[in-house]
Amino acid sequence: MAEILVLYYSRYGNTAAMARQICHGIEAVAGCTARLRTVPPVSAVSEATASDIPDAGPPYASHDDLKACDGLAMGSPARFGNMAAALKYFLDSTGDLWLSGAMIGKPAAVFTSSGSLHGGQETTLQSMMLPLLHHGMLMLGLPYSETALFTTATGGTPYGASHVAGADNDNNLSQAEKELCFALGKRLAGVASKLTGI
Ligand SMILES: Cc1cc2nc3c(=O)[nH]c(=O)nc-3n(C[C@H](O)[C@H](O)[C@H](O)COP(=O)(O)O)c2cc1C
Image 1 (cartoon, protein in one colour):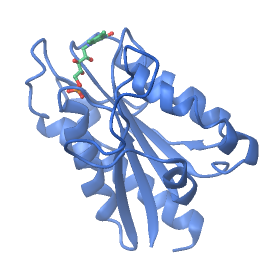
Image 2: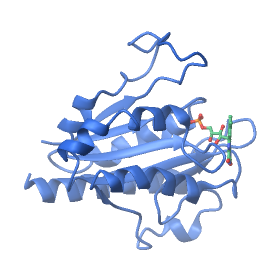
Image 3: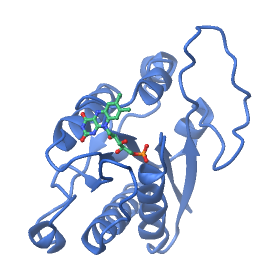
Image 4: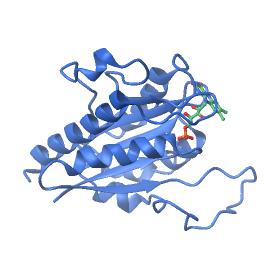
C-alpha cells in the first residue's frame, strides 16, 4: 500500500472536515491508504503542558509518520495570511528529517480554511509550500480540468484546496469545496502510487 499522511491543525473543525474529505479522495485510489494526524496547539507558556494524546480526533503527528509516508497532504487554518503557529512549530522541529533528506522526492499538497473569501487563502497555501519545498518534496496543485475550480463561489484554488469557514466558523464545506478536497487527495495518492510503483 502507498500511505499518504494527512497532517493538519484545526481550531474549529473546518480544516479537519477538509482533511477527512481529502482522505476519501486518497482512499479512492487502489492500493492507497490515508493516515490522519494533527498537531497540538502551541502553549502560551513555553514548557510542555499538553498531554501527548489529544482528547479527541486523530493522534498527534510524529517524525516517524513523516518518514513512513509516501506522500503528504498538509492543512492549516489561515492565520494572518499564513499557516497557524502550531503547524509551523511542528515543522520547525523537523530539521533532522531535512538533514537526512527523508522527505526528498515525495509528493505533497496543501489545503486551508479561512474566515473570509479574500482573507489570504493563496498566501496561506504558499506559506505551507515553502518548508515542504525546502524538504525537497514535489508540490502538487489542482488542475483546471477540475471543473469545480470554475464554478466555486467560495473556496478552491489551483494552489490547493480551500474552504471559506465564515465569520462564525460554521460554514459547511460546499459541494465544490468537497469535490476539490477529494480531487486533491486522489491526485496526490495517484502520483504517490506511481512514484512508489504500487
Ligand atoms: C489569529 C487569527 C488570525 C486569522 N487570520 C485570518 C486571515 O488572515 N484570513 C482569514 O480569512 N481568516 C483568518 N482567521 C480565521 C480563521 O482562518 C478561521 O477561524 C479558520 O478558517 C477556521 O478553521 P478551523 O475550523 O480549521 O480552525 C484568523 C483567525 C485567527 C484566530
